[in-house]
Amino acid sequence: MKDNIISFFLTILIFIVIACTILLSMDLYGVINLPDKFSLKTYLPNSIEVVGRGEDEKIYYPDYEATGIQDILEKDASVSNDYSGSDDLSSIINSNNNTNSNSSTLSNNVTDNSYYYNQLDTYGKTIYSTLYSNLDNIKSGDYTVDFGMTFNELLQSDNGEKVLADAFQLSINALLLDHPEIFYLDVTKMYMYTETTTTIKGTTYKISIGPEGDSKYLAYGFNSKSDVVIAEDKLNTILYLIKSNLSGDVYNQIKQVHNYLIDNINYDSENTSELSHGIYGALVNDLAVCDGYSKAFKYILDNIGISCIEVCGVAENSSGTRESHAWNDVVINGKWYAVDVTWDDPIIIGGNGRLTDTLRYNYFLKGSDTFYSSHTEDGYIVSNRTI
Image (cartoon, rainbow, N blue to C red; front, side, top):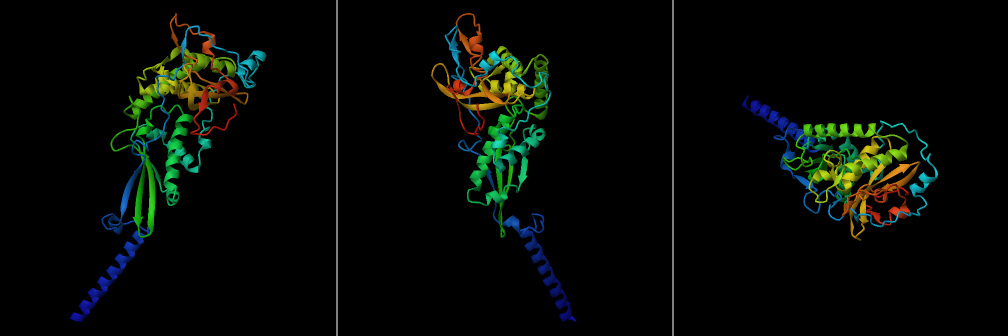
């Protein structure tokens, strides 16, 4: 009898051991997921690695220093306006007033803001589109965008980490260049996190993008989603007023937007506000540096259905100084033309501060022969248009 009892308990014990072994094995191989307190994976190597931390690895974004970027011109300085570029729009306008084959009626449709998106690789497009689809959540400033194991296969390769880091960098650049309405982010505070899990099956990688700790990645002056929504309402009101005062064909609408920005924005020569680099500083605070001008120009043209992109690079001002700079290229009748609103709004030294038409339109709708003698794209996100 005693032997039978012992045999029975041994059989039960063996059954339990076999069952536990099977369950633990299935958990290790990912067939099932046991709670952490029961899982052997808890005791196997598992690490969280943060990508994008440190001064040399943070998100790149063009650093526009305020001093020296804007063209400083003496009042009534002699500036040549005799451009010979074969694709200089001013000569076309003078010879043919009916330059626009499209309707002159203002459009309420936003243009397809995918110029830089289309230049990304598959990984960059995935990051860009996922961030864009989560913009409403991102406005909180502390939302973490989870990519799960989307990039696991890439990170298994020898060069995968660098490829993904480059894709992350370029996708952020492209997103902000394509969408100036995303004015509320400080991308230098956004980090890509890699969760590395190692089991007997191998190593897997999960990616997420979010803030550092309890901090937020909102731009200075914005502390919550409600702050962002209030700012967006202010911008929408200003945009409505601008659009309601526009008239004429595409050329005249572009000119009116160009002039509105020159007449209303003050150049932030002391770089006093981080918001001067975006549309909020330009349109609400009336204070901007070059990328604030160029983003505001694109933002308005986007919302009246005129194709426009922001271009980043370097430019040589009247003092012969080459500085990081931003401007715009626009499309009229299928051709690209360059506009530098910032340099068309120069600081006038001396006199009564009158801005002559020569200065106001010095960099307005120019072709490559003239414009790109002083401006050079940085090539970080490659351009494929012909201007």
